[in-house]
Image (cartoon, rainbow, N blue to C red; front, side, top):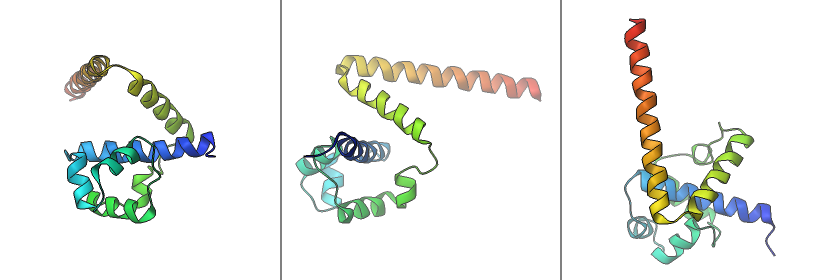
Length: 125
């Protein structure tokens, strides 16, 4: 039986793969084909239902052109990773419509912060 901590780690690895894949505008089918696995297996890995083998992880890292330290975001503190995991867990429980609303809100906040930063730069110059 898998421990809760182990399940969480499997979930985090899968979530990271999903995030990186989406950042690169790849579909599950595209990535699965490039690493020679079934799309359904990749889906289960991203959802934390399957453990990702080291061989598969290294293939993914090669495609994403990153090393394992970057993948695991070694610069982030444990508290930051825990907070991100909690946010992701809550986000995934939302309906698709609610997820869209969260994404729109994040975009709004980012634009607001960019505007404030730009105004500060103008003021400082």
